[in-house]
Amino acid sequence: MYSTCSLEPEENEAVVASVLAENSNVRLIPLRKRIEELRSEDVISASGAENLLREMTAEGNVRLLPGRFESDGFFVAMIEKLA
Image (cartoon, rainbow, N blue to C red; front, top):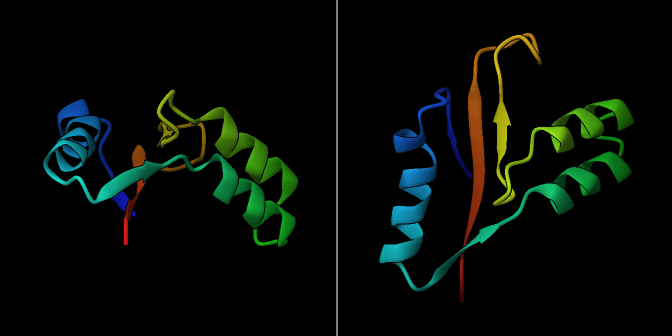
């Protein structure tokens, strides 16, 4: 997991893009499936899952905006190392 308490593209999307470009043995994992799994396991509520899914970026990351989740801004991406 790559997560920051920043909404700045140079600290988020740019870092993820750089990691992906520099490492052929990694890939970005869209978070949609994991959020849905957490919901089905009752780790998060249905409304919590729906709220997170609304915050998905086109690439499959999550961007939480201040005021929408009673928190600061956050960015979350999942990068998997391939075998």
